[in-house]
Image (cartoon, helix red, strand yellow):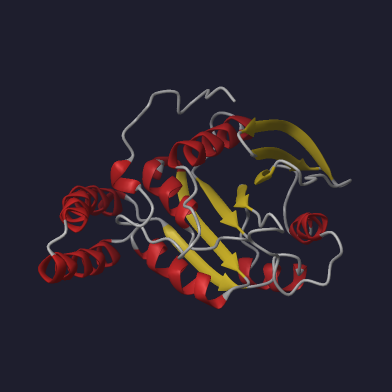
Length: 247
């Protein structure tokens, strides 16, 4: 895959998973550069002149990649909505979304400072340097315009629970990294084809102007008769499929 937008090899060390932002144990963090590229391609599909957008992830896990996207692209994101079926994931996602606020950054700074005092590890000292830089930026950005965040627990294949959590908010962009069905299983869904069921559930409250970007194992089928495929990218063992709902 050729990068169109995140084309420069930027140093994303401050945003590495498990450094300042939290990650779920045993699960790799979504690549920061790829997350930024996906979001910017989504903006391109939305078209120029659009106002800051609301992004949503129905399989958010720790909400790491949406939190990073919001941090990197603050000017074009006004709201982040996340949901997951797993209660532990929701708890971690709440911490990451909290890092988009001065209060959340301050709490994380105290946590890392305590780890420096207890363990005196270089990794913790590096994290403390990172969060000092990040705190300053978040303080400046929130003073101009804070990003709204909403989080709820729901089965991504259940349209009723998703709609209840979204609360009639217009969704500009869905960005999600779905379970591969092997290393990470779909939880508590009776659907024989969970990807198809998720797209069906999302369709009930999206508009033809909404853009979806679904990251998945390359062997999974990402398609639904109610959506038009805009683009398909492949990078390593991962595919990213961009869709828009049909009118």
